[in-house]
Length: 205
Image (cartoon, rainbow, N blue to C red; front, side, top):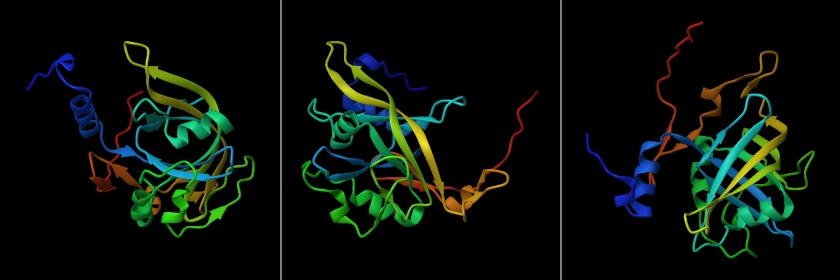
């Protein structure tokens, strides 16, 4: 084994090892709205579900230059977001919205995808996605370094409305067809993956 003490690595080196090892990661493609009405759309891959008692998911939004990204700023101001799952046919559009734009410009200008009104929150979603969640901010956790400076904005979002294409969800069983969803997963750097061979293991009782 190659042993690498974390305190001997730079933050960039630590991040490289984390993002290259914790794989594959689902991508939360998130719409938020600024206080001036601009719709922001951006992908984040430090995300997961976190509870079986409440419909909660977490999204970690890394800071750049100690400033919150537009999605984080909008979530703190408006407390609403629509989280979309990314299917393989939307991968290129998702990647385009990772571009760094000023807060007064919308990433929607970079792609040709229409919005759809949400049913319970003000922020709209993307019509083309097969799965989207209308969410409200449940908890905000600023992640600080050892000097007290915020380095990551961690959001716990509560799903208020689930939206599924009928090709993806079997309503009687609530079974989500992962093959039909055909999700994209993040690896490291510019590398992504799609579902390959799957297998089943039953938990012991």
